[in-house]
Figure 1 (cartoon, rainbow, N blue to C red):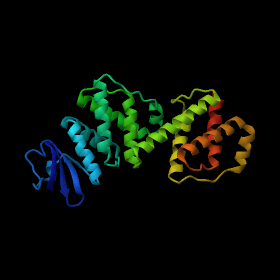
Figure 2 (spheres, helix red, strand yellow):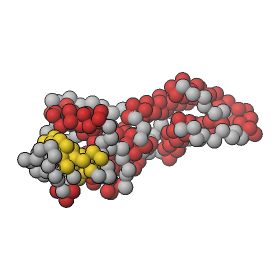
Figure 3 (cartoon, rainbow, N blue to C red):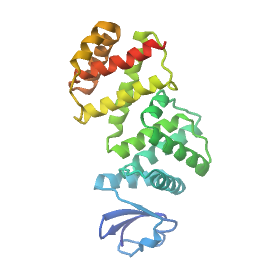
Figure 4 (cartoon, helix red, strand yellow):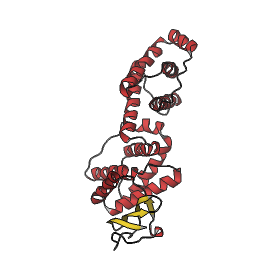
Length: 277
């Protein structure tokens, strides 16, 4: 491979015959190199691809602000979770998550701490990404010599899910916020306090996340069990009416029509919850 640009002693952009431009990382890989020099793939400890000039420019700017040691810790952590969890990650995570954790460490060192109100919801929604995020935080704490708060596991989880699903982080955050809003409405309307450890609560959470995802992906099964709908309207009017209140909230947030069948599924979940209070 040919060196296109040396970003620092441990990171270079190189020309790869199959992947075109790639980011190579490795101890001392950029030392003494200049544009046009050859660099063997065996010299690189890790490499990844950033498609497009905008992403490459963002990564270059990040390297001007973040220490080489921190970049090395992040690359090791990301390589570990890719191998351990078999994740196919959008390579933009090398920018977004590095930037997030670097400033999380800086805030911690300045005595600032940002609370994460959606930690339990995030763990229930994305359990595999959450487990990987726990390992990333544990590794970064050891590598950088800090003690990041538990709430950061939730933020890292959302970055991982964004990279796994190829959805924007803002879209994933909006999705998480919507589910949190829906559960608050359920708690107030049914006068209950949902317990993240309760199986019925977990089922409701997973249903809400999966329903929103199917709606956004246009993969929702619109078949409505009419006979069941009539029974639920008559037997459980409070839960049935509440289900339509939730549907209107989802429609407003997602700016799309929600299939009527969703009222049936939500009513069943909420009736199960109200029965156990």
